[in-house]
Every structure is written in structure tokens, then in C-alpha cells.
Image 1: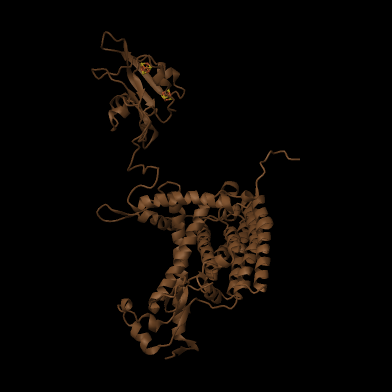
Image 2: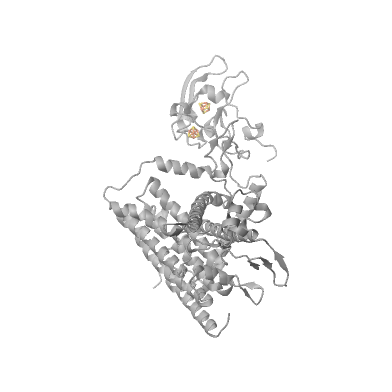
Length: 177
Length: 398
Ligand code: SF4
Ligand code: SF4
């Protein structure tokens, strides 16, 4: 009795040769197309040569590196409500609040650290923030450090990082899309 | 002038010494090229870039990467300076012997394959574009005007049987390696390779019997000569044309003998780590890999020799092209020999490329499918092919 419902295969498939040549034909087409590109000094592959090239087509929705949004006077917009630290599933946001100099604003963060080596890039912190003070940029490359303490990004780093791609991509806003 | 030393003709000795050395070097060079193309060809056909990082620094900030060829060098160095790890309990003699069983047969069997036709040195150097070579032309013209030799290391009467005998030895490499390293996965790989290679050797041998019947010889030189003849005045009598079915059987069986994808059950990485050479490390592992690459070249050489006329170029005889229409193009001896060598290289390169292409295109068979294909499809087909061939030969055709 057959327990597995297998499709009956005809002779042409069982002899394998036709299918094998079909498969080899497909790869051969790829081989010569790419070879021709290499031989004419173009890149014959869809991958990128990472350190020399970076992806220009990062999705604007990509959840990459965090930034803290600045006010016009350069201070962080964050009001140290700790909503992001509370919702963070990786528990990687450390915030210490202090009193703000500005009388209109009650609190501001004295310490704002994100340990990006623990972060799972879920984006919950961005969603939780009531004042839109924390955002995630599409870029993730070069999110590296020689030891794990360098992966803890402090307030200074989060406020001042500027990726070197056009603004459309950086702020996740593409008017044409 | 016949110079003799201890009863050995000195010129003959050096001729065959250089010939054997050249063929040995050719096999190793092709092995290196194969291990490069294994990476790079697969990368190109999979739309990747492939190995390109290992490089030799040159002055002015340039790097010599040679499209990943330096990676081979890096591999060799890395394998040389790595720890040669051995299993705790193992059969030392067999463990070390296995490498040679895997490595030697493929190189040895090439000795009977002709790389080109007859070479007459005195005539060879007597063309305008080889005049720049010093000393040799005058030497051969003066001392050995009638000396000629075949570009083949050993002209055995039983060349084809020799190839099979030596090729059959390579199964010991896998068995001994798997058994002596005292590891279950190695053992599994060894058993798989033993049954696989033995069952495919049957259909491989039977597929070539048809060729033997048609050309009435097992001498490879004569086999290649016979293939240069023309059928109906225009079609070269290549093995592929007189035995098309045998070619496909031979191709499948040869790939299986070679233990390459889609028949790489003995070293199926995803099932039994690395099969029979799991316990080999550093340079010994490299030798096993290298043996595999050399075997690809060897299979390519066999296909080219048995089914694609070896070194022969269609319509090219010893003194020029004789086209079917009756036209004739005269070529000097040197040109003819160079064309023959090139023709052989091109065929070998093409089939080596094709075997690599198959390896990167196909998934692996299941073990029962492998055995079914071998015993229930290829073997009956080979026998049918043989019977048809016998009937045709007996009726006097071809
Ligand atoms: S992205 Fe997720 S894990 Fe990372 S800091 Fe924000 S909430 Fe935490
Ligand atoms: S949720 Fe926004 S405002 Fe609140 S602490 Fe986090 S970044 Fe600051």
C-alpha cells in the first residue's frame, strides 16, 4: 500500500536526461551572459562587492540605525519619558532623566544609550515615542565595532550621525514613491 | 646518430622523459585550473562574484588577484601550515596509503592517451615561425633526420583495458580512507562509494565495448586513428556519431565514477559531513580534493578520446586539410601537430567545463535512485546498445 501520494513519473523524467539538459541549459545561459559581462568590463553578478560598493537601493522603510531628532537649538527632542526603554523587547535602551533648562520642557535625557549589539531592530521604540524623538534610518551598513562597548551608542553619537547618502533615502521619505 | 647509455637510447629516453613530465605537469596544472573554476565558474553561473580577495600586494598600491587564482595559492599555503589532525585510533598504514590510491590512478592512466599525432622533430623545427629556437633545429636536422615519435607516453596494446584496470584501483582509495579513519561517517562514505563505483563501472565498461567492436581494437592510438576516418566521405567516425547511446551511458557512469554531483553520495556534505575523507585534514584533505579535480580532467580526457576523436581535427591529415568537396589546404608539419595538440586541449577543456557545469546545476540523487539508475536503467541500456552494435557489425555495416 502506498502511504505517500507520489505523482507517477513518465519515462522521460525517469531517464533524467531531458531534465538534466534542461537544467544545465539554464545555468549555461546564466554562465555565458555573466561571462560576457565580465569580459566587457562590466559586473556580471547581482551581488555587491561590499567594502568597495554599498547598496544604493536600500528600502526607505528599512529599519536601520537609530537617530535622535534634534530641536532647533541642537538639544534632543526626547523628553525622557522612557516609553521606548519600557517597550524595548531587548532591554537595550538606557535613559537617565534630568531637569531641562528650558522652562517649557520638563525633562530631558542626561544619558541616552542604545546598545545596538543587543537591539533586534524591531522599531517598537520608534512607534512608542510620543514626541517622535527617536527614528530609525534605512542604513545599517558599517554598524560595527572592534569590541562590544563600542556598540553602545551614546546620546552624542545618536544625535550627530549623518549618513552619506542623499536626504531622500536618509529620512525615509521619497517624494517620488 | 644513436647515442646509447647502458643499453638505453639517450634521445629516446629524454624524449619520453620530457613527454611524461609534460603530461604530468598538464594534469596538475589542469587540477589547479579546476579548483579555480570550481569556485569561479560556479560564481559566474550563479550570478555571484566568487573568490577574489586573496591577492599579492604589488608596488603602487596595486594588488595581483588574478580573478581569484591566487586563492589557490592561499589554500595551499594554509593547508601546509595547518595542524595535520589525525583521529585518535586509526590504521596508520592504510590511512596514509589511501591518499595515494585516490591520487595516483588518474594521473597514471593518462599515460596511454595520445596528446597529438606523430612528431618528427627535424621537420617540426623546419618552419618559419619556429626559427627563433636556438640549437634544436640544427641538432635534429643534422643528427636525427629520421627520428619520429608519437606524443603518447606509453603505447600499450591494451590501453583501454589499462585505463579500466587503473581506474578500478581508485575505488580502494575511498574504501581504505573510510575504513582506516575509524569513523562512522567515513565508513558510511566508504561503503557508499564502493557500491556506487563498482556498480557504475559495469555500465561504463559495457558502454565502451560497443566502441571496441566497431573499431576492432583496444589500443588507444589505433582507436583515435580509426576515429579520424570518414564515414560516407564527410562525417568523421567519432565515437559520438557511431555510438550515440553509449556516449550518454558513459557520461553518466563516468560522472558517477568520479563521485561528483549528482552522484556525490560518498561525500554528501549535508548527510555524512565529508564522507570517506572526513578524518583527513590539512594537506591530506587538499590532496583528496585535488585528486577529485584531476579525476574530472581525466574523465574529460576519456570522453574526448573515446567519443570525440581524441586529438584529431576533422579532415586534417598529416599534411593538411582534405575537405569533403575535394579541396585541399596544405599545412606544414609543425602547424598540423600544434593544431592537433590544440584540438585535444579544446576538447578536454570543454568537457571539464561541462562536467563542472553539471556539478553546479543538478541536485544530488537519493541513494536508492542512484542504484536504480545504475542497475535498472544504465545497465540494460548498455546491453541493448551492445546487442544492436553487434548485429550491425555482424551484418557488415560501418
Ligand atoms: S528597535 Fe526594538 S530592540 Fe532596538 S532599541 Fe528599539 S525597541 Fe529596542
Ligand atoms: S519614547 Fe521618545 S521621548 Fe520617550 S524616552 Fe524614548 S525617545 Fe525619549
